[in-house]
Amino acid sequence: MDAAGFLREYESLAPALHAWARLRCQGPIGRAITPEDLEQEVCLAAWAARERFDPRSGAFRPWLFGVASRVAAEALRRLARGRLHRGRERRVMLVRQLHRHP
Image (cartoon, rainbow, N blue to C red; front, side, top):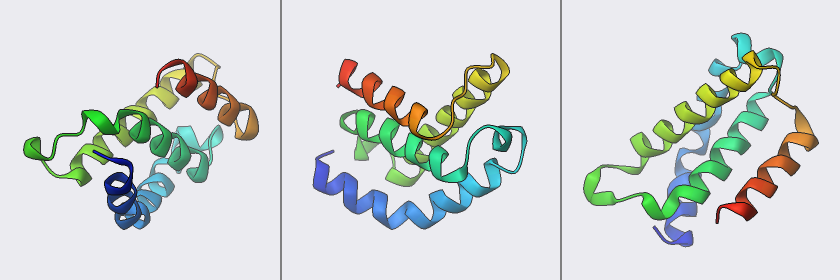
């Protein structure tokens, strides 16, 4: 998916993703990450994987929420290992990861 298509699809689903992140952060994960940080991680992961999205295989919404579920599961694993970081420190780590894996 090209950048413009990704942004168009993502923006249309942003309110639903925000509601999803708020619900997810009510549980154990919410002690370590804010809904906004979770949303940002999902956006970065989806952006990095956007070229793997194939509209012939299904719609963008289930694909995006699949990415979101994997991001949340990884955040819970990091939380359990004591390696989940909040705020700016986490964003710096994510940007470094994206630069290593374009």
